[in-house]
Structures are given as structure tokens and as C-alpha cells.
Length: 235
Length: 366
Image (tube, rainbow over all chains, first blue to last red; front, side):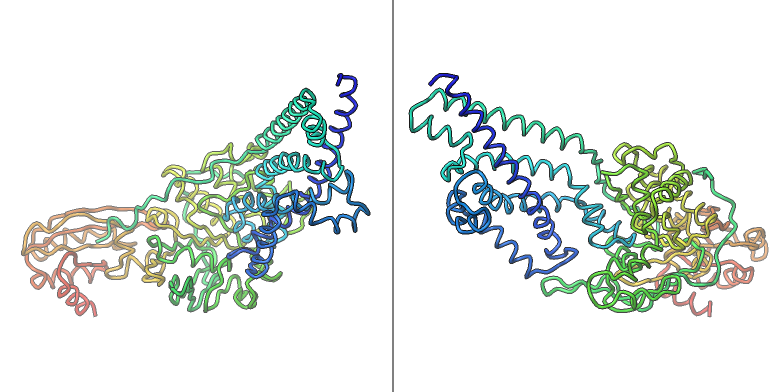
């Protein structure tokens, strides 16, 4: 294969990958963020403590996460068809990608939101803030650097998943690497896709880290342990 | 209006007889895995309008539960809390979530925290504006009020800084400015100075004192440091094991025989030099401080008095003197001289003697 043959293939593949990953990331964030926050709020001692709901959401998330993506994709075919009208192509791949990524992102959100100092929640409660205020003004902004890192991780995972989307004819870089590189012994093309993937992932990771760091203005929250000088001189 | 930290303001009291914070038979029991821990065991607290009230006790005494029950961040198991005439426990309802009425009541109670609890993602000004956002104030009004409050706490130049760029004392000033944003009548201070060094502690306490004087703000503070009570409080309560063991104004406490708080506020050293000696703590307050009672005592009864320790200090803006003296002879031999001191309006505590003596003192006091 010459470069002039490879170029249009690669261009299309890059575009397909970005298209699938972009949309599924967006859906994963929109769906996973509230789900992750809900996991924290409904937990024991949470602001909306509801252990039954917490258990149910937790189980659903766990089951969805434990399925290998390729199986999820096949299992969801009926659902995919009902949404996009087809089970083949880029649009069809977005559905299982997003559904696979929502619980993944939700768990990352849960971890990030749990890290927020409970004292801040208490402070806003003492000002008369309600739960929604606490979510909007404390939990999300204070965990934003972690949420951005979580999004980066999700994008990178989705790029990995999207390689499997080739099996439903969605195209993308992974698909090229398998169909041409592996099945047709175009080793050169395979290595080029690998290189492109490595570069794309590095760039995303770098951009994500940079954004998270520049937001990370968190000061040292833990003061020194209280000194005990109590009633020393009594008696 | 810029307050100068560190300089004590002249003591002109704003205290009135109205109670702004009242708790009645407040009980808090924590249940976890079948075990019950009683954090508050029937606490009756009365904080008068315009005073600085200190609750002191060791870790685990229940102070923290108490202050959190005052604005119902913790729901008391039983008992009532009334703040500025509003029965908060009645507003709270039965559900675990705070209803609108309770949230409105909370917005009228300021609170400052040991670890400041400032949002790291917001600037100093935005932190102070947060309670105003919750109250639904307009942007213009918020920034005007926030800048005014930052000026009041001496941080007008830090409005655009992030909390991470401030020192501990500055963070607590922001915390105080934020707590005042809703124009509260009552300020709750949860170990506000415990994470600060002694000098910063003094300046924060001076600020609280000034706010108390200038705005007529009632302050309820909890602390484990006697110095805090000593430097700012008009009244104090000692908590132990979920109960209030002693409480009252500082002068009432000093006038209470055997008061642990008074002894702790005013520590005196010195042990009896021999078996047949009587050690007595003498407390002077107000007029009695100006009379030469000790030399009168020595002359009248012709006894030698050794002074083991003495101090004059200001407690809650009140001049108080305490002296530990030693009289020759056992307690039984000294009933008359001690009576003489009592007649002159001094507060006498016999120290170090066995319980028998304490019983005797009580008897003679009655």
C-alpha cells in the first residue's frame, strides 16, 4: 500500500473515531455526572440518604461495568436499533459506547465528589443552602479538577472501546488496524494507526492534566491537630 | 470601618437580660451498630443577647454536638433549641432534611469553623458572597456587601485572592466576614482559633470581641483553650461527658466556691510547705481588691502569712485578683482568720486539704 492509498483511509478513520468518541463522551458526562453525584448523596450519611436507591443504582452501575464492551455492544443491539434505526455504522456505535461509559464515568464522579471536604457542605448548610445549592456551589465546583481528570480517563477508555466498534462497521482507527494491518498483513499501516492513537491519547491526556492543574487552586485544608491545653493548671 | 486587631476595646458591655439562645433539656444520642453514645445529656444553655459565651471542655465532652444542635446541623434526639425567639426544633419538622423555614432561620445565624471551610474554587470575595447568593441578593448588592465586610475584617486588599494564597488567620477572617454576610444576630464559633498559632488566635479573638461590641453580635463559641474563655468571654460553661457542669458569668463563676472553671481561668501554683499548714486561695473582685486585707489579717491575729502565688488579670473585661496564701496551723486552727477574710467580702477556697476540710468549709460557708 502506498501513502496515497493509505491517506484517505486514515483520514476517514480519524474522523470516525473522533466522531464516536466525542458524542459518547458528551453523553457519558451528561448521564454519568448526575448518577455519580446521586451515588454520593443517597449513600449512608448523605444529604439524600436512601439506602435502597443507593443499592439499586450501585448494582446497575456494577453490572454495566462488569460486561466486556464487545458483549455489551451485541447485547444492546435491539436498543440501538430502536434509537438509531440501525445497528451498523458510526451512529449505531455511539449508543453502546455511551452506555458503557456512563457507569464508568459515574464511578469516577462518585470518587471525585466523595473527596470534597464535608466541612464545606456543613458551611453551606449553616448558611441555609439546600441540597441543590450544595451540589451546584460546592460539590461540582470543588471537585472540578478531579472531574476533568475523570473525563480524560473516560475519553481514553472510550478510544479503546471504539476500536471494537469496528465490528459493527463503525470504522475508526482500531478498525483500520485490524482489517488492514492484521487481516491483510499491512504492517506499515498498522504501525501508523498505533502511532496516531498514541499521539491522540497523549495530547488528550496532556490537555486534560493541564486543565485540571490550572483549576487546582485547592489550599492545604488540613490544619495542625488541635493542641490540648485544657484545664492544665486546675487543682 | 477598620478594626485594629490586637488592641482590646474598652469594656462597655452590650449584654442585656434577654436570652437569644436557649436550649432546654437538649439530648443527643448517636446510634451506630447497636451501640449508643450519649453526646449531650440534658443540656440547658442560656445565652444572653450581646454577650460572648464560651463553652469549654475536653475532646468528646459534647461541645461540638452542642454547637451543631444550635443551628440544627445535628438534630437533637430530644429537647428544644430557641434562637432569637424562634423554636428551631419546631421548624425542623420530622424529616431528616432541612425545610425552607429552618434554612431561612439558619441564614440568620452565622457560623465559623475550625478549618475555615472556605471554597477553594472561589476567590475571597466570592466566598463572602456565597451566603448572599443563597439569600437571592442581586450581583451589585452582593459585591457591595462583600467588600464592606472584607473591609470590616481588614482584608479589603485580598478580595481577588484565592483561599490557598492566604494565611490561617486571614482565612478565618474571611470565614468571619462570610458568617456576617446575612446580618446575623448570633454567631456560632466552632473552635475558630484552634488551628491557629497563639498570636493569630489573639487577633481573631480581638476581632470577635470588637464585632460583639460594635454590632451587638451575640457570640457562642466552643473551645478547648482556657485562654480563649479568659480573653473574650462574658460568660462560660464547662462541659464534661455531655453535661454542663458549671456555668455563669465570669464573676459569678469566680464567686462560686470550688469552681473548677474559676480555678482554671486563674491558675495558682504553690504547695503547702508542711503538715500543719493551711493553704487558702483568696479571690478579690471589684472593691475588695483595693483593701489591704492581708496586712490587716496579719496584724489583727498576729499570724505570719506566706504568699505562695498571686496574680491580677482581666477576665472578660473584669479586673480580678487571686492570691494563694499559707497560714500556720491546721484548718481547725484557722477558722477565725478565714472568717475574717470572708467578712471582708473575699472569696476563700481552702486548697489541697482532704474532703473533710472541704466539708467543713461548706458547713462554715452555710
